[in-house]
Image (cartoon, rainbow, N blue to C red; front, side, top):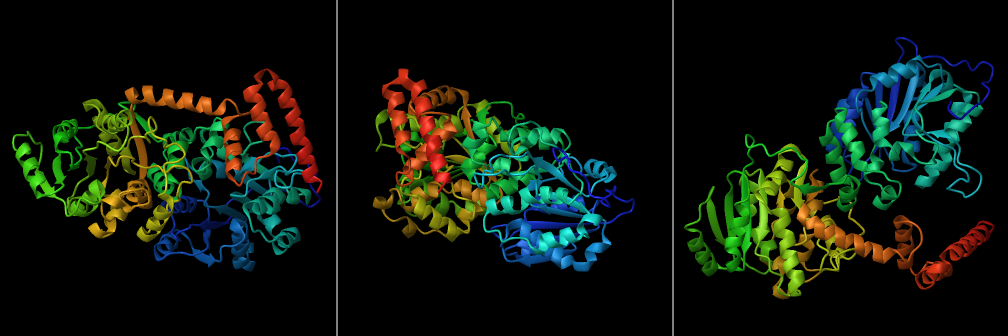
Length: 636
């Protein structure tokens, strides 16, 4: 084994996998909803060429749909209490096999934390079958000293537990039976690592069994290479792509220079059906986190595939026009769309609707035109869309909808309001080329559900605060609507300003509800915490529940303003603090946790701000203080 130079005990002669041998797979699944995502079925279906028996072990509940999925790809399905993580799931699968395990030549223990096969499983099976060994893993982790979970000793070199294959001599040994018989209780993720994953390899090589890794660690750095080097592993032929790279905390990946998109691009180059990944990520990753980890922001027009006029998308523009003097501007924006489109305009009352119909009489339409007076204007564009256009969205047969409205923000300062309006219209419907590029994204990305401008920040204190007072009501509303997509802790990924392009089916969770004007309250209810402001933040989460992801879209002109302002603001915000952005964020988060930052943190920042010439000396002094404090803490 790589890095494990141990003498094999007498009688421990390692063997290659026998020709015509039999394999059994124990595959552990966990899903918060009790569902089974389609990437799991794909993995098990492809493993069928290499294993004779598949036992799926479900931690927690299993829905009827989930059962149906697993019944088609597994020979046996076990549902167990969600305790002990995947490790105790493996144990229950082994116990369920009982004496039948002796019928097999190799046992694979795997879980659902990876996508695959990226490429094919065949090359790795062919290579490892020829190897004389007792057990093997797909990837490994280097030795870490001190142990990060205990702060003393070491974390042993180990094969990672999401994929371990064990041959007959080992799983028929008394050491194997004793290991699983005495498996300790595991109540946390760190328990699963410290009490099994980091123990298993050293334990069995210590007994004289021979282990190997299929795709060794790529560098000498102490890192989780399976998560942090996904593209490189895929290019080496590794058929498993770890999911964690796409829901890891974005500042951590940024700190290590990891670009999650590169792993996704590598999977696509090697022929993996990407819709399986996107559907899973959309449903199970907080949208703002996914937007950052997968780099789901498109500068338009850019390097996306060109708009294909031979594949037109049946489109409807739904425009709420409260400020009638903006009608011409809204029509001009809509005319930038490629191809034909229908137009539905909602107006504040029947008198306004009559005036708008008259104004539209001479307009050169590219489809049908309908003007509707809203039931009530209390919810403004939100209620007009969800109540008065429900039939259009659910039953109109459209491939795409464009939701816009006459935005003015009179309550805000003039410059800020003007920028917000331009931010919305220019990024969403800025030019013929940019709009065609936006539509082409939907043509070429079947799981793209909604696209809209990034969060406005120039003139608005949205960064870090864009929930305002809406998060508690948002969480309650998601539960009511059956949306179980994880909710972002920081600002939500949302179409602030309520303008976007979307597939109607991506908004099904919103339109399945029969909303009433009374739900929105009167004009005084149009405040943070009110239904309209809560619903403004929901579209991406609704889309995610249906398996559709979000892209943010912007023009290069916008970014020349936005990025430079944001970069300078961040620089001013952080230059007084030590270390990297990730560590600065950690420090500030500690500040917010009941003032748990310590005295030397504050003193260091003060010294750096007021006495910059003393920084090198202060760094040494306070670094020493931190080391003393850690030593005292560990000795208690």
